[in-house]
Image 1 (cartoon, one colour):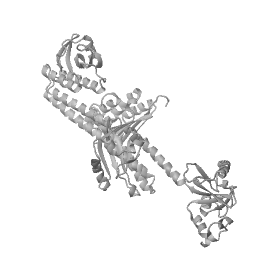
Image 2: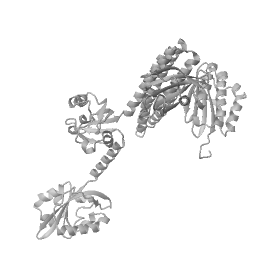
Image 3: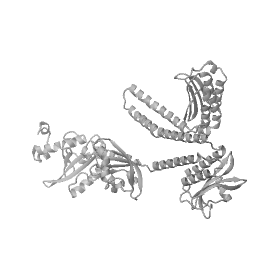
Image 4: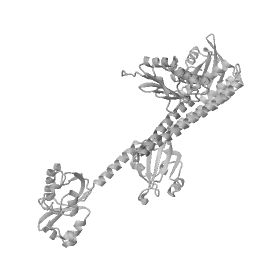
Length: 625
């Protein structure tokens, strides 16, 4: 024994151990060890017990064991001791009991306790081994939190062994995605779920990960659910490093891409329809029966119907101009109610086109605002599914194209322009999608990453630069969204207040010598009419002033809507001069703002040039502001 242990005052119980060695073993044990007599009095406690409960050496001796329990457990424990004395037996740790210990300072902590009876000289002694499991409880709680987080995602998370490929963990998303139970999935491997890859092919997919050539792999494949249906999925497979290389698992995050595939299919179908109709319409002429018939035929094939017809209405009487039918000649005489239906742009599933019930979809053709006729399609039997919105839009679009063809007597130049417009529209839509789906998301992710970094940066200068970078990213995202609107919006701005604003800015292009840059923020179409009546003339007057006085090469128009409408017109010109402030326009703009309870200002922009700011409150439903 060392001097420290041999100098302690040993009670008589210590002497009953087999010498100093046995006591040394008890003293250095990683768990607390104490012995109580038949009355529950502590007769021995090792150093770990005293340290665990916060007592000085020898301070526990002679005290009741209940002193180590929370107040609310002491009475119950006395009853437990009585029952244990009647039937003493060894009880191992981890027996499922929720036990708590109480330190000298009153704090309570979770413990595991094993009990062993010891009979000595006819007296019952109880040996208790006590283990602090606070760290384990905390780890289990963290594990539950992580599992809850993983279960909250709709994506499937599969963790499996790289050697056996057997799943060791699946989240709730994986269970819902596959239709199997957790127990079933834990008996399976990824190969059991993938009808496209056998084990050899799947191991070839994993090989670059396991060798360290790549950190992750993404593949598009299918998962076969428990009911036998196949679900298209995108799988991100990773082999993350862990401390214990021998138990390093592979993680697969699986996303159901059914909606994306369906959307892509709908886009491809729509694009195919558009291309086909442009091709057919490229040679369409008034009175060209063959071209009309080809148009009806092509559209019928794209819609998956049995036939269709183009009819002219003359003095209220329908007359078939051209028709196409897959089986029999199309009807030459149309029921009046069918024409009436077509004039309402309708789709129906139980109408009479030929003998019996049919599925029908039709749209009116108007030339110069007057009814000209109808374009309609039908199936010999009712459809199992109703006509979709895309089908209705397609037929309506076809009717409009026919009307425009008849109105303009399509020329080669007009058709060529239409083909060019289609190509530009597709490119603009593609660019807009790429900007929204890729660029904005990456900028947003970068901004979130910077924001999470700011709190960990101690240097004020560096923190300020990071905050400025986040603000710049936010401004860039807003500008990209404005650009996306510009790509998606019709050339004339479309209907509504947003379209009026675009038309005003486009109209100023000639006077300015360049196109103003327009940025929207908030629900522009929610601006009340009484505010819009002043907003539009204010914008027009502001752009006129820039054209007359600013000598600018760039103008930015910003309209923000929240609890107020804020119009800012900024140019890079010579700045506000007396010729602007002294005219009638500025007082009129101020009067318009004040009439609505708002403010107006005109001054130098921070970066040079002129800044005009016109701000008025917006009355919202439910409040009086």
